[in-house]
Image (cartoon, rainbow, N blue to C red):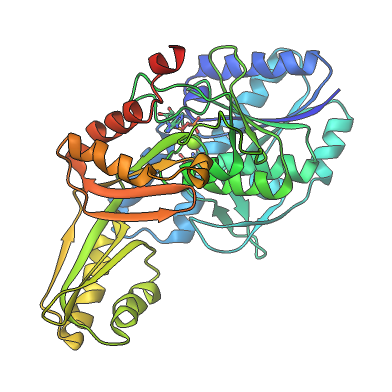
Length: 410
Ligand code: ADP
Ligand code: ASP
Ligand code: MG
């Protein structure tokens, strides 16, 4: 008998029929004698619908109230799923994040879990109950409702699994595992039997939303066996594993991630002197705007062009902050460009292979795709390109690095 935490995403609970289907899946595990804790997301589209309502009332909805609003989505699904289980004759209890006492800090909209009181859940499990917990939400020390960021139900699932020392955390979603890249963009993408935490962390942070990045961090830190599976079809899914020894057969590239959510800012003609980068990025950081890639280049005339990326939602705010800074610095002009995309190749195999970057650049050149920015780490290479070439780039890299399903079958 095992203790299993199962998380079901928005599509998996998107209709009443689907909620009944989830109940049946949970019941099958219970019938096998396992203890089951279920985490659910809001019905698909619901969180977006609630955010849109808030935006109709207020152009910058107060963060505390927005969290109160969006957490209602998950409160609906926990209650409905518990009812479905009870209708089938199973003892089930639903709990919001605050009821469990998933304690977080007070950073509304992106709160971090600090502690989970697992006692109540354990008591219910001892009584033979199925416990259904609302994903994506917690409560701060003062009792305010918080949320964990978009896609945060994954993190609730993994954090509960860690707190309960569960035997496995199963993430049920609308694809049957983690693929070499988003299968909706590359139909030829291949399901991975397994992927290391390290690679999954990069994939998630570079834009693969199949798992929220914090859930992978949690699973790695607390050694939670984590598996991504389909709600709609049977199968082994993908196991996220602790880093394996690199073998000869290790593919150089395990996956390709991409992100359409970033925008590029260029400050042109900055006098080349100590402190310039700090003067530009200092105020941006103070305005709580996260910066991702940064490139700076000195030209022959003694000025530098300073380019960096931020989230698209924060482009306007960043440009506003920079207006004053640029004048102070004597920079010539500031440009914002929201029509960019970031494409990244990820793989621990890169450590032991040379020439991966040049192969990537050649594959993009073959498609006449211009690279605007580059950044690398030990196990990833990212480039910024024009958004309109994103799908072309991902497909060319996927084929070029022999990730296509057909290529593997040969
Ligand atoms: P859920 O609502 O179940 O949390 P999400 O929409 O958050 O589901 O995540 C699943 C989606 O992630 C898939 O439908 C797929 O389009 C997308 N995705 C992006 N990259 C990958 C990848 N490498 N492997 C699998 N799915 C991916
Ligand atoms: N419902 C939340 C969202 O849409 C959390 C989740 O689905 O994981 O982001
Ligand atoms: Mg998700």
